Amino acid sequence: MVLIMLGAQGTGKGTVAGILNKKTGWPQISTGDIFRKHIAEKTELGVEANKYIASGNLVPDEITIPMVKARLEEEDAKEGAILDGFPRTLAQAQKLDEILAEQNRKVELVINLTTPSEEIITRILNRRVCSNQACKATYNLTMHPSKVEGICDKCGSKLVQREDDSNAESIQRRLDIYEEKTKPLVDFYNNKGVITTQEVSEKINRLGQDVAEEIYEKYIKK
Ligand code: AMP
Image (cartoon, rainbow, N blue to C red):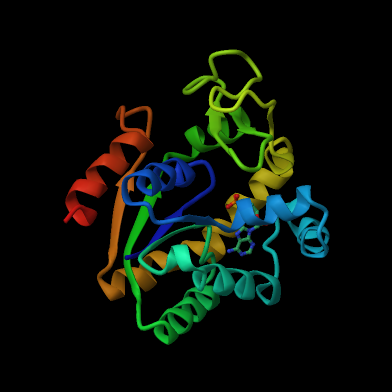
């Protein structure tokens, strides 16, 4: 099954995708993570992508789309894939349909996460990620802190703040781009009848873990 995680930054897409990855074995394909790995390794793609990422802008499709296509063609993505952070525009969604059609498959489920905007900003500012690219565990200083401050529970590496999370301008830019370019995808997938919208919010005591369990039971488990 090809599944898409949709929702603004900080709604918990990565958390839900990570849990579903463990339950299904399908790879979590996070375009943001792939870019960050390239940036850390200082590859040509990483240097180019970072010009856009650091300021909160979208990386151009000429770079992003071939990268996703190649990843979807890898052996471990044949049975299923959990796309996290792609598509982010209508053009990317249309391109994804073409790529999947060539592989005789299609998007079967879109999980759209929503969170009240005041909670989103706090979550992004409190987000910490493992600096070890092979681990990539995510924490939150208040909601889900690591056991030892600044150290990853899973692998012992240092926890860091993403460069684009430490800067209020970049956070706002990403949220604006989400509203303008990514939100129209809700209608796009609604028309295809494949979307489920799920609220993730501390106010209603419903976090990514709860959503992932429910989605798995309802839509994925055979
Ligand atoms: P994320 O980890 O999903 O928040 O992505 C971090 C950054 O990577 C975004 O703010 C964009 O600059 C870039 N990025 C990730 N996915 C895409 C995409 N599908 N299209 C263009 N840029 C992307």
